[in-house]
Amino acid sequence: MPESRVPRRVPRGRRFLVCEPRYFAVRYAINPWMSPDRPVDVLRALDQWQALVDAYRAHGHVVERVAPVPGLPDMVFAANAAVMVGGRVLGSRFRAPERRAESLPYEAWFKARGFDVRQPEAVCEGEGDLTPAGRWVLAGTGFRTAPEAHREAQEFFGVPVISLTLVDPYFYHLDTALFTLDDENVAYYPEAFSPGSREVLGRLYPEAVLATREDALAFGLNSVSDGRHVFVSPGATALAGRLAERGYVPVPVDLSELHKAGGGIKCCTQEIRS
Ligand code: ARG
Image (tube, rainbow, N blue to C red; front, side, top):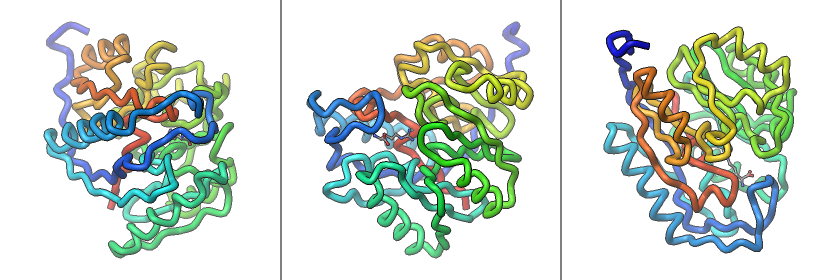
């Protein structure tokens, strides 16, 4: 695109819910990134996580916190605990028994603020697999969230839910393979999806920003965009270049310590959409 044709992107203020990685650890392996033998540096994780919170605030976003619970090492991944659309909160039901207890403290957080929380019947890992995208919700399945939960979400939100099948175990949650840039467009790594799902994405988003495998392996698709700024892993260099060409402003935030558990920026961030 010639310089003059690059659109001026306008950010929209967001409200995020996060959880400090005070009790972060890799004690079990429920995705290919996790190896309990490799040490994690909790202080480093805390510093990196704080830099993410600071970056959000520096860009005008509101950040709220849920208190971490000892014994729940993955609780830092706030995105998995619920998904909120138009003030309605759909809670979570984790596939791994090790993570099931995380649902409750998040549910309590929402209830204390006056929100009802619908408990899903099928396995449902919140915004990890359910991505509100303007007029519809994109929903991943294949590794974690069950297709029945996609139907529950559609019924509960009254918003069309578009089911997409993930096929690569490294990209086990939808938010490791795709993120929304704004209400109209997304960025994704095509090979993480089944052929049919790839075709669906191609029809819905002919202008999508496509990422390489290197971008995806660097957690580049686990990004958060406010419509202008894209909080993105610094390792996703090709992706950052493509975003900049389209008028987005990459804001690099390094969460390499959290990558050891298979999570990045978006995993640590739940959006409060009231
Ligand atoms: N260790 C966590 C798990 O495997 C990481 C979750 C990452 N969260 C995400 N939204 N992808 O469940």
